[in-house]
Length: 185
Length: 91
Image 1 (cartoon, rainbow over the protein chains, first blue to last red):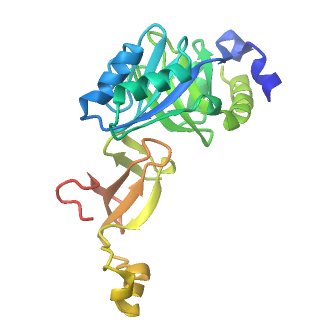
Image 2 (tube, one colour; image 1 turned 90 degrees about the horizontal axis):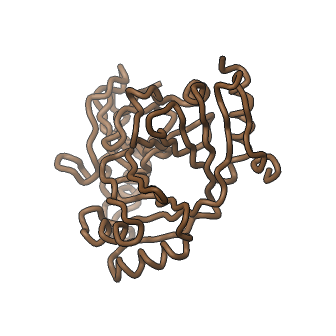
């Protein structure tokens, strides 16, 4: 599996699609009461991002993203800060508040789809309307892609998308994307 | 396939959800203080209602929250949804 995922870029669908894994990101799960100012405050302290409270949206800075996963659950993804730093920063900031901060880095990976064919390929295995007018900038959605649970992120101003998947599904999804993209003309 | 309006995520395909059966079933109290018949009724007996039915659904592959759906068991038409613990939602 590792060997396949390390293959940097896969061109498919007549050049309309490129698939690549984005390795080395840091993932932290946060659960807490959205009404408690300390929860949003902790995220702002550590990542300098305002906590997204609207369902299925994300907030981003240049180096990190915060995804809404549920009314009291978020996924923090960082390019630069390590998960250990984020976890200790959040815990320090949250103090004794009833909440959960968990490093889930070893359980997740990201697959990026670039090119005009990106959403056509996803549409083959997903029930959501992924047209940019329905799924645009700043939106994310947890759903099933080819029966595998994924978090889909619409990348700004393009057809491009990113998938955050459990690593145990990554190999399967990679092969599924390969196969689906062969026929996405 | 049903299109179920999750109170948080909006309309989503039934394949993202798991059904948790009839809503509003109240635990009768301490197990050793109720009769076997009452306990069995709580555990096993359901109304199997024909018509508008309140049932629990779990958005398993979305926001992972439980909520209540009012669905007509004859036509499968969904009348509305309630968040758990909201006004009008039975325990």
